[in-house]
Length: 193
Image (cartoon, rainbow, N blue to C red; front, side, top):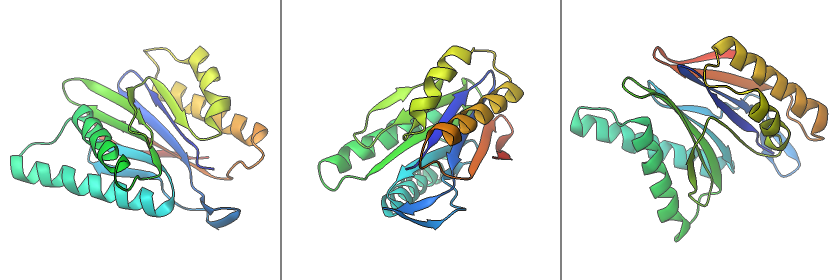
């Protein structure tokens, strides 16, 4: 039932997720933040079973921080995405994590980056991406409307259109959504829809 989506713009990445924590047909709470900061300029939008989602994201975050402490430098967004993919692939053969994620980040030299990764450790660098049933309705619209020089206002409007589409067409649409942006200034919340 989770819905995650992301857009890479000119100098930022914007991500959106629902805020529902659901187990089977029961809603546990409506204020779950699935947009988890990895460090000051990178975040996961992560979905899946609550235990796997929390355990896996905390494991990756701890290892990224450990690397920064040992080496005195931050990993790039691409490096964090590839490390995450590697850990999912290793776990796949032992005790797999049932989690899908989007990795959004901003690096000084290379700019914004958005990665999509699923529970089978498939990793792709994307301009627009999503996961969950809601993404079936959103990605075709974004494919038509996305362009490389997208501004933050245009991206937020695309997010609003996406959430409206999910609410209108998905029978089990979550009621609340959270939108965050990652850019040269770090991570911040820009809207609650």
